[in-house]
Length: 526
Image (cartoon, rainbow, N blue to C red):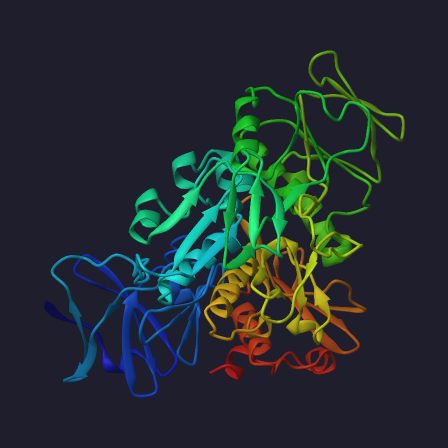
């Protein structure tokens, strides 16, 4: 162990973050009152510089995707990071801050994991290996569950980062080996049985068994349903032709990449997040892209007209063509798609059609469970419990929303699914955690521009924008009946973090006071 002076005492004020270098190691220093802490300098998720984040008490937030950590212990508090931070003993003496470094550089702190006991009679079966299912399995072992854990996936791949499919994987910056959330050794070391390629056909809650397409059955003591979503398809002639794609799974993305010839003409159906992220990725491959959508502007319902116009201009500047206010009525081709016909009479030649018009909960196979008539989701309580021994998380769960005064909501965000996987796991273990304890958050990256969205507003009656949408530096406040439900932002990372923290501790200012004078959000959380 080596101790090195890395900064002067006066260089670090209360609540301040400072990146320093000790030898070959980059560290983040933080002061909380009279205490000084040193942790790893980058977020384990996607290597964001934590010095650009924000300290809210002892909670350290990542600037990009709002992972949060305990600055004292390095422990992970909120995903999307899966790991905590390395910590380094720090002290002040002789007017300097000293940090102890190990002889070998420390990696990010993977959580300590329990293992299954041979004589344990407890078993948890997790159906679905997306964000919710995977993080539930990790949380169970991390918190000391010693019973059997079976993680059952319909796909033939270990749990992977679905957020990369429409971005880094499709634009060529990430290869398939960068997609898995954990490697095979992780699951072996944690005694998590991963069953691949098993498609469930029935859940019998009375006998607590699940039947599978291959004729096998599995019993469970407690079950977490986390089966995710299925992409919507176009209800038009020719929608089943080769060359017409949806993008939900790793296999979907791989098949699409196989058909991306250097000069392929691409039509994307849908001007929401998947559609625009795919468009940005394909333009980075210099492919001609046209987006069709019945909407007049991208994101108009969710984000408002001004932000929708900004996204449209950004894509047009990068060479994307739009056919907005139109719908495809026919897809044509002999053995492969070659033409689409729009409802305005226009005919377009194309080599690929990519459909991104939303998803629906993957619950159609479930028998004996009550599904919501509107969207076939499953209603749960604040602990994500649908029935005795049965929990539901991720895209298929309709749960009491903290930002909406308990009104049941369904959210299709990656981080929310991770949060819900953890919440379900803790409640299975008898450690109460509520959906009211976290704030929804999502992000989208297009042409290296990132929009962050904190909270959840299914609808809103007032929109106030501070800053310049045209310059992509703004905060957009979505409120209803005077209460701020959500905030979208670009290039205002620390304020976005502070707003999430205010929502979490339920002290977010009301819409009228924000309009009257924009608060110093950062000052309100430290």
